[in-house]
Every structure is written in structure tokens, then in C-alpha cells.
Length: 443
Image 1 (cartoon, rainbow, N blue to C red):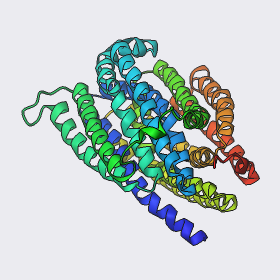
Image 2: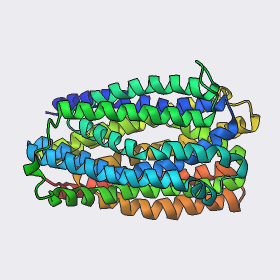
Image 3: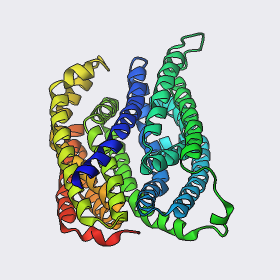
């Protein structure tokens, strides 16, 4: 049986890994191309993207729970409830996305001023946020379709779509940032237009694929009256699940506010480093997502012990790979950063941060696994409570003390991040081994 489960995990992991790699490359290519245009544009886009991550996490209120319920209903063969969940998720995120699009379009400058973005960066940041944030409704539908397709064992389709989008975005960036193929040189505005256009294409393709492969139609009998039971389940799982992620992103946003006090070079270094270390924990994210879907299927079949063993297998793999990659990244940090900037202060600071990050990654790998796995079982409140206590009581408080009060700068803040991730990882391991999460399934 374990062999069959590992085969199911591998079947999910490969397309999810490729899709996530391509999504990561999408952001990295934006940063790389903008780095050839201006370090200030990179810093502004980094601030914008941290804010936009908060918006994206609002969609995960429903997407995280959609994935959990779809995987459990698929395992239990409850097809009508599967259709209801998908329909309710698309409707909910459509309206959330619409509100966020309007907010980002008309309030971008006020948000960035509140974040303390310097005047020389504001000119770059405002236009980028207006364009990319203005298309939030597109991302809401796109991410919902992707979450559904992955959870019903059709992860290959989002992978293919992201591959197409990557090609479009790279071509669009090249044309619109630097003014090639007869287009004007628009700089950061060009990057924003290219990113938004690529997401529109992805949304259209994924909607078509969803209707062709998974839900051929949404029968009115399933939505009259509105299936409030499924909406309650979505919110019951989604609010605490997204709450943990939103807490983390707000923590990062707060620390980014502190980093902005240190100076433009620290802000730019943080943007470069974050884009690079995404590749370090990429495997952990993908194996955690794949493992969570498999665990959800097992919980739907009432196989809690198999889910427990699968979880241990997944987190051990994530730990080994993340630590190995972080060491490689630290060893070649100077060469990597030299490809992005000629500023020696940024390069030297980034190299130091890479070595500190080697201490951070073990905890991060376990935390990525645990939040996804516990959510898949229905144990959604524990990660939220733990995150609120440790992320703010350790990460933010010590980040401010180490980075600002003691004057250790970005490196000191990274030590605070390390303590935050490590403490949460220790607690999560104890929670998983206790099997208390097995009581929380929805089927």
C-alpha cells in the first residue's frame, strides 16, 4: 500500500514541481530583466510584490479550503459535493478579486506612501501596483482553477499553462521594458503590462480546461438554494488557513517597512535574496503541496495511519533537499548576485545573508510541510495560533530589536527569521507525531 501511495505522490509531485518552478521563474525573470534597467525599479517592484502577496493570500482563503475539500470528496467519491465546492469557490473569489482590483487601481499611491516608500522609488512603484494589482480579479480566477485541477489529480494542465505564460512573459518583458520589436521602452510599466497580459491568457486557458476535464456544467439543482454547507466548510477551513499565511505575509510586510528605514541598498538586497532563495525551498513547497493532496485523499478514505507515515516521508525529503540547496546557494552567492548587480555593497550584504539562510531553511522546510499537511487533515486552527504567537512574538519583535535597535541591519533581521522558523518547526513536529490532527477530517 505504501508503495502505491508513493506512486500517487510522485504522479502529483512532478507536474506541481514543474509548474511551481515555472511560476518562480516568472517572478525571477521580472527581477532579472528589471535589474538590467534599474536597481531602483527592482526595489520598488519588491515592495509592490510584498503588498500584492497579501492580496493573493485573500484568494487562498477559498483556494486552500477548495483543495482540501476537493481532495477529500474525490477520495470519498462525492461528485455532487465536488461540483458545489468548485462553483462556490469560483463565485466567491470572483467578487473578492473585483474588490481588490478596484482598491489597487485607485489606492496604490496611498498604500505605498503608508509603507514609507521613498519618493525616488514611488514613481516606479505606483504604476506597477496599479497595473498588476488592477488585474487581481484575473489572478483570483486563475489560482482557483489551478487549485481545483491539482486537487483532482489533473496537475499537468496548470503546469502546461504556466509554461506557456512564462514564454509570453519573457517575450513581453523584453519587448516592453527595453523597447524591442517596435514597442516603446516602458521600464517597470512594461514589466507590469507583460505580467498582467500573461495572467489573462492563463486564466482563459485554465477556465476552458476546467470545464472540459472536471466540471462540464454546473447544474442549477446543485445551487438552488445556494449550498451554504459547502460555503461554511470553505470558510471554516479557509479563514484560519489563510489567516496563518496572511499573518506571515503581514509579518514580512512589517519587517520590510523596517528594512526600508535601513536604506535602499538593504531593500534591494532583500529583493534579490528573496528571489534567489525561492529556489532553495521550491522542492519543499512542491513536495508539501503534493503530500497535502495525497494526505487529503487518504483522510477521505479513513486511512489516518497511512497519512501519518506519508507526512513523515514528505518532511524528511523536504528537509534534506532544502538544506543541501541552501548550502550550494551560499557557496555561489557572490557569482549569483554579480549577475544581477554591480553594486558591491549589495553583493557583500547578500552573501552574508545567504549563509545565515542556511540556518533558516531546515525550519522553513518543516513549516511549509506542516501547514499544508495539517490543513489537508482539517486541523486548521493549530497553525494559525502558533503562527500568530511566534511570527510576531519572535520574528517581528526580534527583527526590530536585532535589525534596528542593535543596528545589525538586514543580517540581524535574518537571524530573527531563523529563530521564528526554528521554534515553529519544533512545535509542528510534536503536533504531527501526536496524531491529534486525525480527529479533524471533513468526510
